[in-house]
Image (cartoon, rainbow, N blue to C red; front, side, top):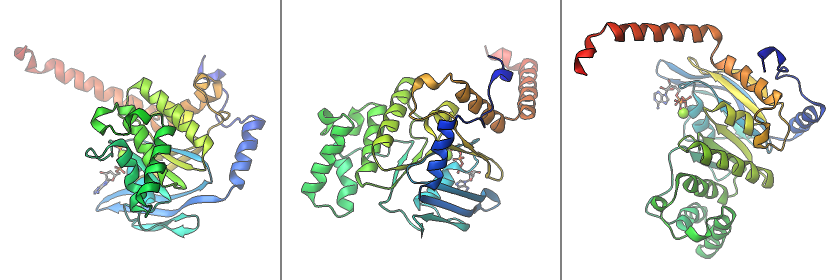
Length: 299
Ligand SMILES: Nc1ncnc2c1ncn2[C@@H]1O[C@H](COP(=O)(O)OP(=O)(O)OP(=O)(O)O)[C@@H](O)[C@H]1O
Ligand SMILES: [Mg+2]
């Protein structure tokens, strides 16, 4: 299919348009208002504004260093903004809280605790008694299909299983928002695909709003209602894209024209054609230097 045959990513079918109309009428769960973050000379985030509605799935994509992790850490309350505000159900976020569950890329399970105790940990911290925490943890373990592994330690699990436990642990406290920073970034393609389907299944079934950072365009378009595209230096919003692919999602939509059109548009936002040419020049230069260099003698 040539580029010209693709519809515009702005073309929404009546069914998709209707879904976005309804979504925008839902209450705002999280609001980012005029957010700025400065690290010395570096403007990590500049004037970020965004309203995320109840049960919406928002993905964030952008080049390395554009401030994605900084933004999610501020939403989590792990980092303070230089100016601006984050509101969660209308209340200012200043520190981490049980309404926000977090799953980050590195396996953040406690290696010295079993699967069950990892999940119980947050519940006990929130004041559940041991018996209730244990039965809640068991329910989550059952839900993620790891009943046989409840007494296993993280090192005995595969990468996908560890991330399933991390998701269960984050959800066990019944947060309103799930904050995920490249949670599947370290997984192989097959496991990653399974985890995406698994996350969508959870999202469909529980009352949760998801904020999900990824480097992977397919992942963003597959998962998101809307995609926040950031640019670097300074970290600014380039565009908020409404994904025109109907819900519920399934892998057979990956080749749909609206899927491809959205991907192509975001690809162009992140890597404008002029930048690609510059990269090519740079590569040629590297090759020339390499050829003229005297490294041949080491072989
Ligand atoms: N604690 C810090 N101190 C100083 N500078 C920081 C700190 N954290 C982030 N930065 C800088 O802020 C900018 C944004 O970093 P951030 O980690 O948020 O980017 P990112 O989009 O998550 O990148 P990546 O895709 O590589 O994960 C970068 O220039 C980074 O060097
Ligand atoms: Mg990051």
